[in-house]
Image (tube, rainbow, N blue to C red; front, top):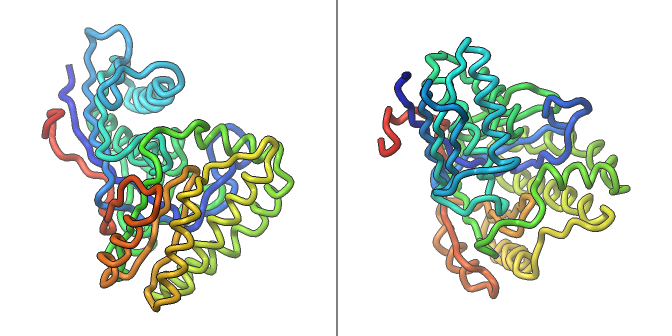
Length: 326
């Protein structure tokens, strides 16, 4: 029996959004994205291969996984087993320290941690690019969580690539949680529905690359104002395509809109703060570090905000030991 391995990966928040799949069944993205890995939102995953097991056993958040969540894990394990020339089934135990399946990129950190822990437990020595590609096959955004700091995943790319280190900008992310439960429609289902039914989807795919290029240039120039403006346009364009679907995909809540307005009000006071939302109701606010406490307090006062999290930019996925508790 091989020894188990434990890995930690952090969620990443897309500053420039990925929404939509490239043609084919390889889980490649239709548009480029730019993300920031967050230190405070992490997944810890332990993987142990055991020839005595007759099936993979997958525990997510303290409960045995079934259906599609389990199938996605098994698919990644199968790909890594095939690469290693191994057949043993695995025991997988994974825990998040933040809400799951609610629009906080839990699949990104989850599959990045799984790819690293499982490949290490199988004795594979994969490069970061190879790990990113394996994670991307299970969850496209997971390709980015293999790396720390600012990361890009180009349209049709098999792996993400780092763009800038975590400390490249003097910023943090303030997250306003507007609900504590899971979302009703998952991202993959939502993307397919948007592509098939929204008249705005093609416009989104056509416009996204130039917005990505603008944001990437702004990041490398350390131009937070332009980066922030690009962020906000990207998320609003993405949600516009969802709202135009039939029936509409409405992830945003009234409290989401209140937080957006509060961020705009803060900017009118000279505070550099910029919002983004994924396929969920939470609002993530990129803010200059000097104003973090002010922004966090302001967002905590918005009606409907359940909780406020603050995160520094984070590192990439890493092995942390051989036991689940390591």
